[in-house]
Amino acid sequence: MVAASLVTIPSFAAAQDIANGTLTVTATVESSIALTFENETGGVVLAGAGTNAATMALGAVSAYNSVCTPGVTRTVSATDFTVSSPFAVRVVKANSPSSASYTLAAALASADASNTWRINATALSTTSANLGSAYAYASAVAHTVYLTVPFSASTGAISKVVNFTATAN
Image (cartoon, rainbow, N blue to C red):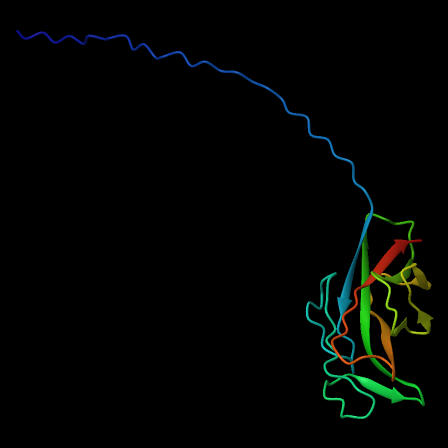
């Protein structure tokens, strides 16, 4: 007779060490606005359109030679000439339900002893000048930059930074 037996060998599972913890996450949501420069119909195509640091290249400008850059308009008076081009500013907001509009201001980053600069009808200097105080958010608002060059000015390159500031109302 053959006897069978089943031998059970106990299994010893290794004990696992466990540690628990909690992480509390906090944040404070703040309101914010953002400004971008946009191309405007009929204006010079901006390098960097859709960003907050664009460049408007007016090209070679003069009182009497042809204006070659598309989007540049020129007027000539007895003592100077003015070149201009439209552009747009778009300001968007987040987490600011109480602000229905914004104020826009502009200033030259450095003085210009020879030429005159304007945005729309507002003359620019190194002091911030108000361009308007009830602009709607999320729409591209058209503006025009004007550069007036006196006939007495020297020839050569002109480059000027115009700083824009949007402030939530």
